Amino acid sequence: MSDTAILINTAVAVAAIVVLIIRFKFNPVVALVLGSCYLGLSAGLGVEKTMTAITDGFGDIMAEIGLLIAFGVLIGAVLRDLRAIERLVEALLRAAGPQRIPHAMALTIATFLQSIFLDVLLVISAPLAKAIAPKLGRFGTARMATALAIGLECGIVFTVPGVGALALAALLHVPLGTYLFYGLIVVIPTVAISISLMTFVFTRGWWKPEVDELPQPDAEPAPATRSDDPGAPRTAPLLVLFTPLLVSLLLIAGGALADVLEWKNPVVSFLSNPVVALMLGLIGTCFIGRRLIGQSTVEASLGRGLRDSGQILLLNGVGGCLAGVIALTGLGDILGRYFSANTWAPLLLVWLMAAVLHVAVGSVTISAITSAGLLAPVAPVLGLNPVLIALAAGAGSLFMVHLTSNTFWLLQSLLGQTTRGTLKTCSVGVSVASVVAMGPILALSIVL
Image 1: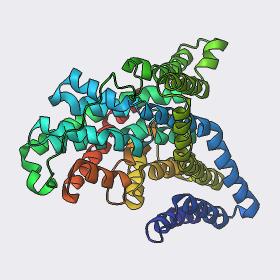
Image 2 (image 1 turned 180 degrees about the vertical axis):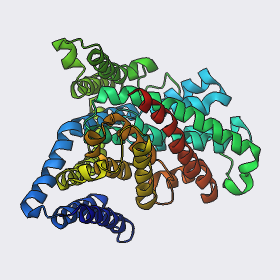
Image 3 (image 1 turned 30 degrees about the vertical axis):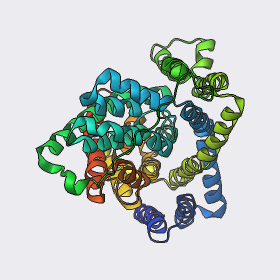
Image 4 (image 1 turned 180 degrees about the horizontal axis):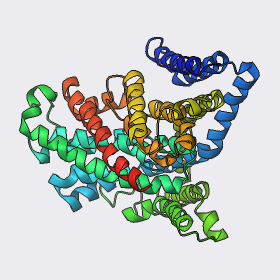
């Protein structure tokens, strides 16, 4: 089949996936599988090769990230019932002070709390952010809503074990330790700069509380819980609650450092394996949970975590289906002839493709996975470091979080914003982060 025909059929497959999700309200999992089937058959792979590519692609992704996603979500579920996130935000407020809390909260969410399912993390942290907002003055709601939106969405795609980051690393065969290291280099300045830019424009007259915020009834103070109440759950120092997760991330990072230094040690290699590291983190978190809230509560937390992880696992797996079919069509060789490795244009192409897909589909994870799958075969042809393609796809997938996003509506309702206000804090705020992120990514392309 000619190169032109393969390019056309690939474009039709991606467009069909978008139309099925947006126009006909298909579940993204079904739409991605149907698009993969169409591409394989229309590209002349035949039924057998198409189905083999789909099943192998799904299996390959699950083999790489299935347990990682499950362990990460389960850790987050137990931490939720330990009230670890609420206590962490309260500690940040005391340490950073009201004026610096938006940056502190967003950076913490983006770099440290990505084991927690996004909607759960948002539902837990939003009421805390709303309570903090009046302490920041006239623009408090705008600043806290923007901080939450940027921290949550950037963390998904740039920070291990965020579900988007895990999928991007798996599709492009990037070691998780490597992705963790370079993702932190990108996400920290991106979050800090983006929030500062949005704060600047808000305080220059762009935020108007009378039209951007909903009228709020006077809240009744919540009754205080006495620490000596026999019905209150036991507590532990905050550092103790997060130690297992922190140790897991340090083990993964240590493995990446050992690889860079070319230091081989079987014990280090075993403990720094991401599956082993997160498994140890889950065991440690459950042990702490059993001591503080009891075995039955921990079991209930794990049950909720397993239910939350099901859709995430399927969605990431079908991203591998599309990538597997694309690899067999030879799209990588075709696109590789149009771009050279000594320019930054390919990275901007990755960003643009992910951005367009996100505007159409409205899902950060789907757009990142689809664009990475489309361009994964190009990496060997171009000679680009795959981690750069993964990060650029993640950055592009952040562009224009809008009305089709569950995060958009949760931020609107939980922070007391109008739709107009949420378009400013969430849609524009995360889009600014999407563009800002390309700065450190392009800088990394010079040295990688």
